[in-house]
Amino acid sequence: MKVSIDMDACVGCGLCEGDCPDVFEMDGDKAKCKMTDVPANIQKSCKEAAANCPQEAIKFA
Ligand code: SF4
Image 1: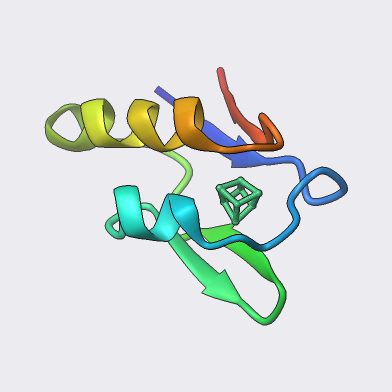
Image 2: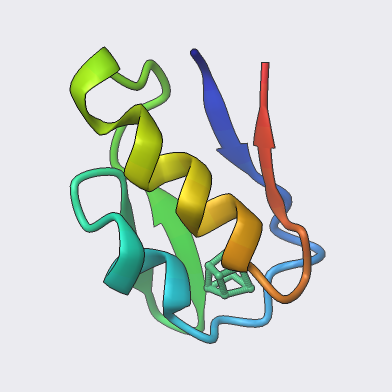
């Protein structure tokens, strides 16, 4: 499972970092992905972060 953030949509609320700090971290006023390929053991929390993102900025492929 690959993950990315739509940087135009992200408003830097920080929720994703709280939900899944293994994958997301804040970088100034935006979030960034610490990895693009999400290992199976953290996919659940990564999907929760996507579901909770107010901007629907977290995308999977
Ligand atoms: S939850 Fe969404 S809007 Fe908030 S920092 Fe993360 S990617 Fe950006």
